[in-house]
Image 1 (tube, rainbow, N blue to C red):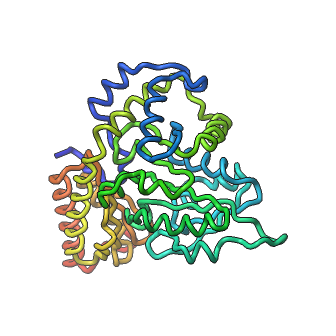
Image 2: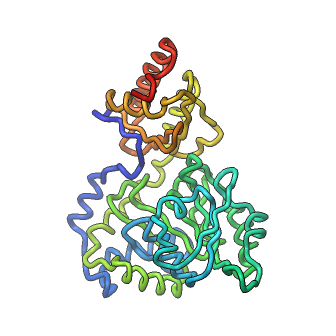
Image 3: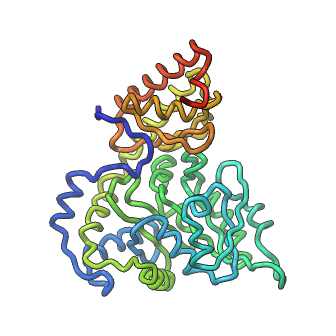
Length: 356
């Protein structure tokens, strides 16, 4: 059990002792010159796992998504994506600001575009409208609660896009969660798409970094964009070493996070004034709603007083994310805090007015 139960995000994971040792002893070189052997090993492993020709180590998932967009579009084009996607909501409008690319967000049921939605959204040739340059998918889906889609669903969307000569990018920040949950290989999810990114610094627990994977030609363009964005790193093998440990040792244990998320979700479902769709608790993210005025804000503050940290993502919604630094005892401690708080509200007619 930990002193503080931190459920705000899986980005809060701390590197393992094996990662720290690997970082301390990493063989390094200048990566801009493509001479860092540890980075080369990491990029080769990422390419192998995703079934792509090449990989590129980048500083973050946001950078990975941006270089993927920039490498496959040109200014004045449009990218099709989900309304709740990370690219649209949490990447500082970088595709528009840096790439001159317009986003076309579409509301979906689970966070995943359907083939029909993509077919209808792809622009016809017309002087008045931006041509479609890229389709972006996200798996697992953050804002929809860690929901996942199958390789077959990705393939169906990619087939529609390919028929219109439009490439598909997969934001696979938590793609290993999807693979573990569905007992499928990551390369199956990546096979239908032109490019894929995944994060090392979430559930896989490395301190920094993401990978971009695709064809050699695509990675060549992405490497140039990475340099332009200030992402040309030097003796970065000290970070890549932790990424290698993450991929070699931390993937299968993601199932523990999924089990803890399910336990958390089932416990929340029993509480008064809390609404949760358990069918969406598929991996390591739990989103629930507090149906009382000011309830979400108050729950966050009262949990913090009990050394349980959670994250409010909307007026009534809260996100919890399980990870390696949250164990089963921590989940039970969080549920105890939720229970004490919500039952107190029930006895006293709800949370204090205005959340104070």
